[in-house]
Length: 213
Ligand SMILES: [Zn+2]
Image (cartoon, rainbow, N blue to C red; front, side, top):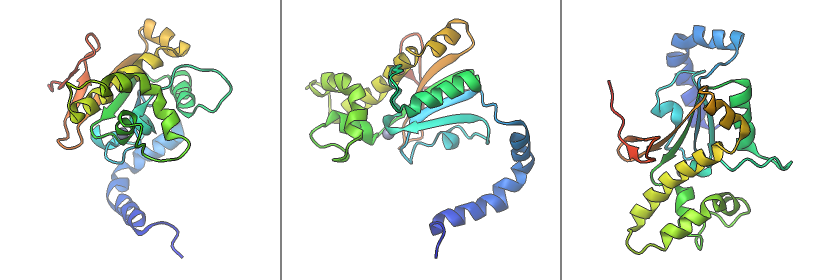
């Protein structure tokens, strides 16, 4: 009986023979001393937009939360189950991360579903409710006849990043630390087809290609 799918076992074997030997000491020190990532990254579940791959990061570097369409809900201490908010609380209050990056991406299925609510990704119970977070923005865009479907999609992908950043600031711990200059918030958008990363200009909200040194 197989314990895991073959491709995972093969990948793990590669990891243990190639990557792990070079990082053994690093892993041991992380195990001994615990994690202290400086950056929390909120990204989509989409298998094509993996933050650790895109930012070429080592273990222990990024505290990653992934959910459908990289959304942060508003601060709602209502006793319900809030997985993203719990991760955020842990990153900010326990790990004391210095940066939070919300990264959207092109061809996002969640965003596409939000723009065409009549044909949702799944007929189930959860995606529709989750994507209703950006429903007002989706409605205003989907009614714009001057935009092509691709333009609407890219626009909502980027608006959803700004929306998540706005919601991050509704969390008291985020608000206080940002005001004290101990926490910085960033937005980004990754184009799967070209590998291009666009970074949000915090002053204007526009997405621009970052310059490299
Ligand atoms: Zn996505």
